[in-house]
Image 1 (spheres, rainbow, N blue to C red):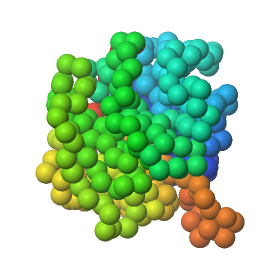
Image 2 (cartoon, rainbow, N blue to C red):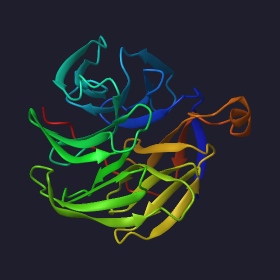
Image 3 (cartoon, rainbow, N blue to C red):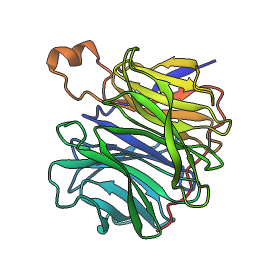
Length: 290
Protein backbone atom coordinates (compact mmCIF):
# COMPACT_ATOMS: atom_id res chain seq x y z
CA UNK A 1 0.00 0.00 0.00
CA UNK A 2 1.20 3.49 -0.88
CA UNK A 3 0.19 6.66 0.96
CA UNK A 4 1.20 10.25 0.28
CA UNK A 5 0.91 12.90 2.99
CA UNK A 6 2.10 16.45 3.59
CA UNK A 7 5.39 16.39 5.48
CA UNK A 8 5.76 20.18 5.59
CA UNK A 9 3.02 22.65 4.68
CA UNK A 10 5.37 25.58 4.04
CA UNK A 11 4.83 26.38 0.35
CA UNK A 12 8.27 26.87 -1.18
CA UNK A 13 8.59 29.09 -4.22
CA UNK A 14 11.09 26.58 -5.61
CA UNK A 15 11.48 23.64 -3.26
CA UNK A 16 14.52 21.55 -4.16
CA UNK A 17 17.52 19.53 -2.99
CA UNK A 18 16.15 17.34 -0.16
CA UNK A 19 18.92 15.58 1.77
CA UNK A 20 18.41 13.28 4.74
CA UNK A 21 21.08 12.97 7.43
CA UNK A 22 20.60 9.55 9.09
CA UNK A 23 22.95 10.40 11.95
CA UNK A 24 20.64 13.17 13.19
CA UNK A 25 17.39 11.84 11.64
CA UNK A 26 16.96 15.21 9.95
CA UNK A 27 15.73 16.23 6.51
CA UNK A 28 17.15 19.37 4.91
CA UNK A 29 15.87 21.05 1.75
CA UNK A 30 15.91 24.43 0.01
CA UNK A 31 13.68 27.14 -1.32
CA UNK A 32 16.09 28.26 -4.02
CA UNK A 33 14.29 31.42 -5.10
CA UNK A 34 13.68 32.69 -1.58
CA UNK A 35 17.23 31.85 -0.35
CA UNK A 36 16.06 29.55 2.44
CA UNK A 37 17.33 26.31 3.98
CA UNK A 38 14.64 24.28 5.71
CA UNK A 39 15.33 21.68 8.40
CA UNK A 40 13.02 19.10 9.97
CA UNK A 41 13.80 16.42 12.55
CA UNK A 42 11.96 13.32 11.41
CA UNK A 43 9.22 12.34 11.67
CA UNK A 44 7.34 14.92 13.77
CA UNK A 45 9.78 17.71 14.59
CA UNK A 46 9.06 21.35 13.88
CA UNK A 47 10.47 22.92 10.72
CA UNK A 48 13.26 25.46 11.15
CA UNK A 49 13.81 27.92 8.30
CA UNK A 50 17.30 29.39 7.89
CA UNK A 51 17.91 32.52 5.81
CA UNK A 52 20.82 32.27 3.36
CA UNK A 53 22.83 35.12 1.82
CA UNK A 54 22.65 33.58 -1.67
CA UNK A 55 20.63 31.11 -3.73
CA UNK A 56 21.51 27.55 -2.80
CA UNK A 57 20.14 24.24 -3.97
CA UNK A 58 21.84 21.23 -2.39
CA UNK A 59 23.50 20.00 0.79
CA UNK A 60 25.97 17.22 1.51
CA UNK A 61 27.08 15.97 4.92
CA UNK A 62 30.80 16.39 5.71
CA UNK A 63 30.71 15.16 9.32
CA UNK A 64 28.54 15.66 12.40
CA UNK A 65 29.65 19.31 12.67
CA UNK A 66 29.80 20.47 9.05
CA UNK A 67 27.83 20.43 5.83
CA UNK A 68 28.73 21.41 2.28
CA UNK A 69 26.24 23.79 0.69
CA UNK A 70 26.07 24.08 -3.11
CA UNK A 71 25.26 27.71 -3.89
CA UNK A 72 25.35 30.26 -6.67
CA UNK A 73 28.98 31.24 -6.00
CA UNK A 74 30.34 27.75 -5.35
CA UNK A 75 30.75 25.27 -2.51
CA UNK A 76 30.37 26.58 1.05
CA UNK A 77 31.06 24.87 4.36
CA UNK A 78 28.24 25.34 6.86
CA UNK A 79 28.70 24.98 10.61
CA UNK A 80 25.72 22.91 11.78
CA UNK A 81 25.57 24.51 15.24
CA UNK A 82 25.89 28.17 14.27
CA UNK A 83 24.84 28.19 10.62
CA UNK A 84 27.99 30.13 9.71
CA UNK A 85 28.98 29.80 6.05
CA UNK A 86 32.52 29.84 4.65
CA UNK A 87 33.28 29.78 0.94
CA UNK A 88 35.31 26.62 0.34
CA UNK A 89 35.60 26.35 -3.45
CA UNK A 90 34.45 29.15 -5.79
CA UNK A 91 32.58 27.93 -8.88
CA UNK A 92 31.16 30.50 -11.33
CA UNK A 93 31.48 33.03 -8.51
CA UNK A 94 32.07 35.83 -11.02
CA UNK A 95 29.02 34.92 -13.14
CA UNK A 96 25.97 36.70 -11.73
CA UNK A 97 23.75 35.12 -14.41
CA UNK A 98 23.99 31.59 -13.01
CA UNK A 99 23.06 29.68 -9.88
CA UNK A 100 23.44 26.12 -8.67
CA UNK A 101 20.83 23.43 -9.17
CA UNK A 102 20.87 19.65 -8.77
CA UNK A 103 23.63 17.74 -6.94
CA UNK A 104 24.43 14.38 -5.36
CA UNK A 105 27.33 12.60 -3.67
CA UNK A 106 28.83 9.59 -5.47
CA UNK A 107 29.45 6.46 -3.34
CA UNK A 108 33.20 7.26 -3.26
CA UNK A 109 32.53 10.70 -1.74
CA UNK A 110 32.88 12.76 -4.94
CA UNK A 111 30.24 15.38 -5.62
CA UNK A 112 28.51 16.03 -8.93
CA UNK A 113 26.68 19.37 -9.07
CA UNK A 114 25.13 21.54 -11.72
CA UNK A 115 24.76 25.22 -12.57
CA UNK A 116 22.21 26.98 -14.73
CA UNK A 117 21.02 30.40 -15.82
CA UNK A 118 18.74 32.15 -13.33
CA UNK A 119 16.47 32.86 -16.28
CA UNK A 120 16.80 29.29 -17.68
CA UNK A 121 18.81 30.43 -20.69
CA UNK A 122 19.65 27.36 -22.77
CA UNK A 123 23.19 26.04 -22.51
CA UNK A 124 24.32 28.55 -19.88
CA UNK A 125 25.19 26.00 -17.17
CA UNK A 126 27.31 22.93 -16.64
CA UNK A 127 27.71 19.77 -14.57
CA UNK A 128 30.84 19.65 -12.40
CA UNK A 129 32.75 17.01 -10.44
CA UNK A 130 34.37 17.81 -7.09
CA UNK A 131 36.63 15.45 -5.12
CA UNK A 132 39.15 16.19 -2.36
CA UNK A 133 39.68 19.81 -3.36
CA UNK A 134 39.64 19.37 -7.15
CA UNK A 135 36.91 20.61 -9.51
CA UNK A 136 36.46 19.51 -13.12
CA UNK A 137 33.85 20.41 -15.69
CA UNK A 138 32.16 17.21 -16.86
CA UNK A 139 29.42 18.45 -19.19
CA UNK A 140 29.33 22.10 -20.35
CA UNK A 141 26.45 23.73 -22.19
CA UNK A 142 23.71 22.45 -19.88
CA UNK A 143 20.41 24.32 -19.65
CA UNK A 144 18.81 22.84 -16.50
CA UNK A 145 20.98 20.19 -14.82
CA UNK A 146 18.94 17.57 -12.99
CA UNK A 147 18.55 13.92 -12.06
CA UNK A 148 22.16 13.52 -10.86
CA UNK A 149 22.33 10.16 -9.05
CA UNK A 150 24.38 6.97 -8.92
CA UNK A 151 24.06 3.23 -8.64
CA UNK A 152 24.94 1.80 -5.25
CA UNK A 153 28.23 0.35 -6.49
CA UNK A 154 29.26 3.68 -8.03
CA UNK A 155 29.65 2.22 -11.52
CA UNK A 156 26.75 4.11 -13.14
CA UNK A 157 25.85 7.80 -13.11
CA UNK A 158 22.63 9.37 -14.34
CA UNK A 159 21.90 12.99 -15.24
CA UNK A 160 19.76 15.11 -17.50
CA UNK A 161 19.32 18.53 -19.02
CA UNK A 162 15.62 19.07 -18.33
CA UNK A 163 15.51 21.52 -21.23
CA UNK A 164 16.33 18.54 -23.50
CA UNK A 165 14.38 15.96 -21.45
CA UNK A 166 16.61 12.94 -22.09
CA UNK A 167 17.68 11.02 -18.99
CA UNK A 168 21.27 9.95 -19.61
CA UNK A 169 23.34 7.08 -18.21
CA UNK A 170 27.13 6.84 -18.21
CA UNK A 171 29.66 4.36 -16.80
CA UNK A 172 31.64 5.64 -13.81
CA UNK A 173 34.94 4.85 -12.16
CA UNK A 174 33.75 3.64 -8.73
CA UNK A 175 36.92 4.86 -7.04
CA UNK A 176 36.71 8.49 -8.26
CA UNK A 177 33.18 9.08 -9.53
CA UNK A 178 34.52 10.26 -12.88
CA UNK A 179 32.57 9.26 -16.00
CA UNK A 180 34.07 6.67 -18.35
CA UNK A 181 33.03 6.82 -21.99
CA UNK A 182 30.13 8.61 -23.60
CA UNK A 183 26.67 8.94 -22.05
CA UNK A 184 23.74 7.07 -23.61
CA UNK A 185 20.01 7.69 -23.39
CA UNK A 186 18.44 5.82 -20.49
CA UNK A 187 14.91 7.23 -20.89
CA UNK A 188 13.39 9.57 -23.49
CA UNK A 189 10.85 11.88 -21.85
CA UNK A 190 10.30 14.17 -24.83
CA UNK A 191 6.96 12.72 -25.92
CA UNK A 192 5.43 12.46 -22.46
CA UNK A 193 3.96 15.02 -20.08
CA UNK A 194 6.37 16.81 -17.79
CA UNK A 195 10.12 17.19 -17.39
CA UNK A 196 12.77 15.00 -15.79
CA UNK A 197 13.71 16.61 -12.47
CA UNK A 198 15.54 15.23 -9.42
CA UNK A 199 16.26 11.51 -8.96
CA UNK A 200 17.64 8.96 -6.52
CA UNK A 201 18.60 5.30 -7.02
CA UNK A 202 17.58 2.70 -4.44
CA UNK A 203 19.47 -0.36 -3.20
CA UNK A 204 17.94 -2.51 -5.96
CA UNK A 205 19.05 -0.21 -8.78
CA UNK A 206 15.61 1.34 -9.34
CA UNK A 207 15.75 5.03 -10.22
CA UNK A 208 13.04 7.23 -8.64
CA UNK A 209 12.40 10.48 -10.49
CA UNK A 210 10.23 13.48 -9.63
CA UNK A 211 8.50 14.54 -12.85
CA UNK A 212 8.11 18.32 -12.98
CA UNK A 213 4.81 19.46 -14.47
CA UNK A 214 3.15 16.07 -14.05
CA UNK A 215 2.82 15.70 -10.26
CA UNK A 216 4.43 12.29 -10.34
CA UNK A 217 7.15 10.20 -8.72
CA UNK A 218 8.21 7.64 -11.32
CA UNK A 219 10.25 4.48 -10.85
CA UNK A 220 12.52 3.11 -13.59
CA UNK A 221 14.05 -0.35 -13.68
CA UNK A 222 17.80 -0.64 -14.44
CA UNK A 223 16.95 -1.17 -18.12
CA UNK A 224 15.10 2.15 -18.36
CA UNK A 225 11.48 0.96 -18.21
CA UNK A 226 9.01 2.97 -16.18
CA UNK A 227 7.63 0.39 -13.75
CA UNK A 228 5.62 2.55 -11.37
CA UNK A 229 4.19 6.04 -10.92
CA UNK A 230 2.97 7.58 -7.68
CA UNK A 231 0.76 10.68 -7.88
CA UNK A 232 2.16 13.69 -5.98
CA UNK A 233 -0.49 16.30 -5.06
CA UNK A 234 1.52 19.20 -6.52
CA UNK A 235 2.04 19.51 -10.26
CA UNK A 236 5.62 20.80 -10.06
CA UNK A 237 7.12 17.90 -8.09
CA UNK A 238 10.86 18.52 -8.05
CA UNK A 239 13.14 16.12 -6.16
CA UNK A 240 13.03 12.97 -3.99
CA UNK A 241 15.17 11.73 -1.08
CA UNK A 242 15.08 8.51 0.92
CA UNK A 243 14.25 9.18 4.57
CA UNK A 244 13.83 7.30 7.83
CA UNK A 245 16.22 5.08 9.81
CA UNK A 246 16.02 2.33 7.18
CA UNK A 247 15.52 4.58 4.12
CA UNK A 248 12.15 2.98 3.47
CA UNK A 249 10.22 6.17 2.67
CA UNK A 250 10.65 9.01 0.18
CA UNK A 251 10.35 12.76 0.73
CA UNK A 252 9.44 14.81 -2.35
CA UNK A 253 9.75 18.58 -2.71
CA UNK A 254 7.66 20.77 -5.02
CA UNK A 255 7.30 24.36 -6.24
CA UNK A 256 4.90 27.10 -7.28
CA UNK A 257 7.46 28.80 -9.53
CA UNK A 258 5.87 30.61 -12.46
CA UNK A 259 2.36 30.57 -11.00
CA UNK A 260 0.02 33.54 -10.85
CA UNK A 261 -2.73 33.70 -8.23
CA UNK A 262 -5.15 31.70 -10.37
CA UNK A 263 -2.61 28.94 -10.98
CA UNK A 264 -1.88 28.70 -7.26
CA UNK A 265 -5.57 28.29 -6.56
CA UNK A 266 -5.70 25.46 -9.11
CA UNK A 267 -2.70 23.74 -7.50
CA UNK A 268 -3.21 24.50 -3.78
CA UNK A 269 -0.55 22.06 -2.49
CA UNK A 270 2.17 23.50 -4.75
CA UNK A 271 5.45 24.15 -2.94
CA UNK A 272 4.77 21.80 -0.05
CA UNK A 273 6.97 18.84 0.82
CA UNK A 274 5.45 15.37 0.83
CA UNK A 275 6.12 11.99 2.41
CA UNK A 276 5.58 8.91 0.25
CA UNK A 277 5.20 5.70 2.21
CA UNK A 278 5.62 2.62 0.04
CA UNK A 279 7.69 -0.56 -0.02
CA UNK A 280 11.14 0.67 -1.05
CA UNK A 281 14.70 -0.33 -0.20
CA UNK A 282 16.39 3.03 -0.23
CA UNK A 283 19.94 3.96 0.69
CA UNK A 284 21.75 6.99 2.01
CA UNK A 285 24.34 9.20 0.33
CA UNK A 286 27.81 9.01 1.92
CA UNK A 287 29.61 12.05 3.35
CA UNK A 288 31.31 14.24 0.76
CA UNK A 289 35.11 13.99 0.65
CA UNK A 290 36.59 17.47 1.10
